[in-house]
Image 1 (spheres, helix red, strand yellow):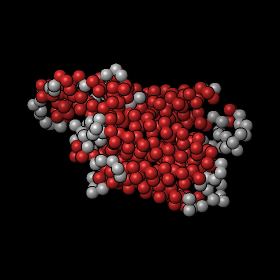
Image 2 (cartoon, rainbow, N blue to C red; image 1 turned 45 degrees about the vertical axis):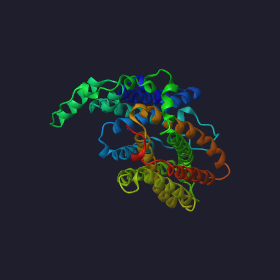
Image 3 (tube, rainbow, N blue to C red; image 1 turned 90 degrees about the horizontal axis):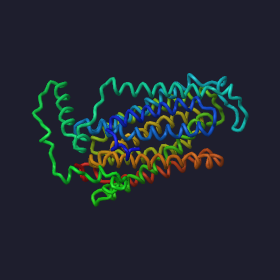
Image 4 (cartoon, rainbow, N blue to C red; image 1 turned 30 degrees about the vertical axis):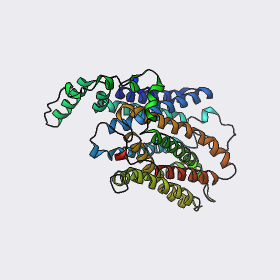
Length: 393
């Protein structure tokens, strides 16, 4: 969906994807047919996947270069959302409204309605987030408006922003005039999606584009392979079997522990490590933490390691989400970000199938594979260019 964002204003597309996510999630809770439910959840993923890249681009193009480390901090809302989702699930799901027996055991729909209520609550929270976008008067970014030739709208935005901050700008649309050849921007305004993808493979960006696609692919597979099994790991860790309530309680703890990762990442990206160094460090540390996870057999030990790993994973993803839009020019930023995210989501969709096959042999196998795959991504990150040395305008 990121490629199609040029058919809309970025902000409109951002709100539309939030509303669609809520509607499909609400529908999943109402439907009875398993195939329709699966389709509804699939559409939730499509809508939500189209929203994530746009959020980063909106922030990146609305702040000055000196404050771009805030883009890493944006990822803090991911674990905050996970905490909220975990709390809702913890308070809603119980053994009286959920099937907690063995896989394959029959469970009457009349006794298995807890997950439907969770869908309703999640949809309500998503609608509220869309409402907040209007409440706080989110606006289209001036960089995007200039890149598509909407100079008057860009001037109006900057004048309003200056007025709100007690400043006066002497700027007109003529200040943004560019050559007719650049103004056409065939690489963006072409109706052919291939015309939008082609600029990603110019000499200055070709290697970077390919590396980023592979990084998103490996990280998504490794990340999902571990996290798909995390509730099961926490529930069946060691000799003690945890109940449904204890499992979601621990999931709340693991989600909450991810929050510091984004805060640390904001400072590290402005340190000597930079974007690339921080990203590789966080990714390599995540791979190591996954291996250490296998050395703890008690529920408490795995909970602690799961919390450490959650913080490192959020740091890793936070910098990846920040680096990807920064490394591409504004004219193709949404396309580049959208394709990278799509590669990640499609690759991540493979992870559950591989995980369930491996977990039948041992619950440790998916962790070993996840660690190895993420470690490969860390090495690829070291091959990326520094953000301040790439072709950006």
